[in-house]
Length: 464
Ligand code: ADP
Image (cartoon, rainbow, N blue to C red):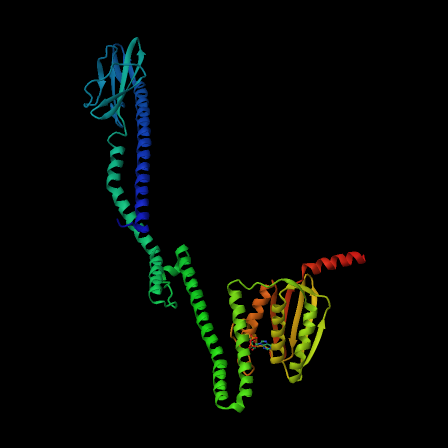
């Protein structure tokens, strides 16, 4: 059996609910209305009988009844009897065949032909004679309100329910339209893989900010993200192949020359060696990034003397910097220990120093400083070179991103992404600051080694 759609289910549910509520209300209203009408009829009857009693007088043997007395008024029939239950004057309803015996001040109920009547008698003494006044009234509710309410309900209810059900169905259909759009779009994307599709936000949906509208936006947002990641992935793959193709073609052509020309072999081997190293470097960086992406970039933790490492790296880089006549300055606090992976941290420092020299100014300076700041080690690599434009500041961390003006320098655009991944794997942070044309500075913050902390504390206690 085909399952009912949500909108049909909702419509059925509230239609049933509506019918039950309306019928219930009508029943309660009719019932209380009837009770009240009965009460009214009885009060009116007793009042009329009491009023009538006051308008009867005697003159000798005869009764005198005031002319103002109406024997039928507002549904109440009145009649006056003597002590022998003989009618003196009055009216009685023709519908009632048999009337009950007289009983003073007692409300009697009669059921006659499906209708309810009330009979009320009152007797009083007048010059030695007993007079009976009898009032009869039909229950105000009978035949009137109740049947009217029922008739009204029978005609109006189905109409109202149909209108409500139709209206409700149309509204739910409209509300669910974006859901149908979402389904259609998802189906289309699954069919042709075109991630640029979006769920249309028609006029109807735009006005509302309900859950369905939010769902549409959430889906579109998700498609944006998916498309973005997909694009990034594609660009990454093409960048990788591009980066590997250059050194590979150099290696192939150099080995070709070497095979033909024996005298060229040594030179060719040098080039091949350099290119192979470049490739190895690239593959290493890619591997680091891939590990970082999959959460497998795990440092081999040890206590690292960062001060010592900075001194060594600065010293190593001096000769490379000298080629550009760049002066390497250091300001390194001694005894700064961090917990980390020595090889990884060396790669961080080397990359930052390498960039500082690469993008540094000829005859300029590169400065490497290290000091403790709270519970962190703060390591800064500064240069006074070309700097970075504000619009490039965010992008330099992207994989394969290289600022247009720095394309002349050798590089792959993977250095900073890798540095960031390595620093994050150590629970640290890195930020760049730069004034375009005046140089840049990269600040790395790494948590100090806990042993370092304890050493410090016991040291100071000892001194105190
Ligand atoms: P690359 O291999 O191109 O150096 P990186 O990821 O290390 O790749 O750096 C990305 C880009 O950031 C570089 O192309 C360069 O434009 C810019 N950059 C990095 N370091 C510096 C710096 N110290 N001064 C100026 N620009 C820099």
